[in-house]
Amino acid sequence: MNFERFVRENLVKKQQPDFNQIAGQLKRAQKDLKTAKSVLTADPTWAFAISYHAMLRAGRSLMFSKGYLPTPSQSHKTIIEFTKILLGEDYANVMSRFNRMRRQRHNFIYDSKNHITISEAKTAIDIAEKLVERIINLVRKINTQKELFD
Image (cartoon, rainbow, N blue to C red; front, side, top):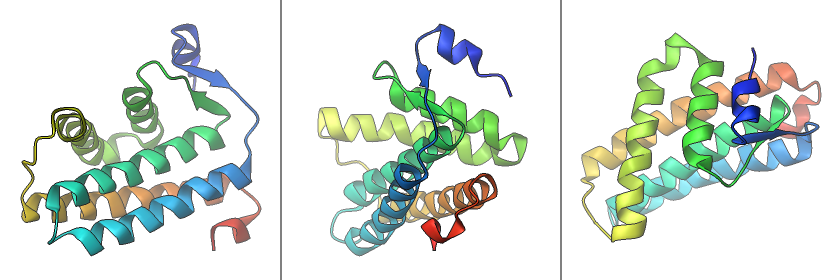
């Protein structure tokens, strides 16, 4: 796959994959999912935001595994677009939800809108789990040091 458009537009830069960095992101994504579940009833909007961050970390790790690093300019949007390309049509629905979650999380973080129901937060957690698991499996195929992810 060619990601030169991302490089040309200064949305990503090339880097050597660092599988310790990748493993750290994926382990943190898994921990974020556990945290999201633990705060679900107390604060559904925060559980939603944490789920989004788990997806973001997983997407970053996938980018890292392909030898790219997002630049600060539009990093969240770039991670989603990059991940969507790598996952393909099978994950179009998940990636569409990921992008909607980005906008909703933005409203919460920057406008303090507490607008997420428990049902929406549960759905976010489910989607995040699906995406994180898929990315872990993809990164395992790329990385020969599988023990980093166990």
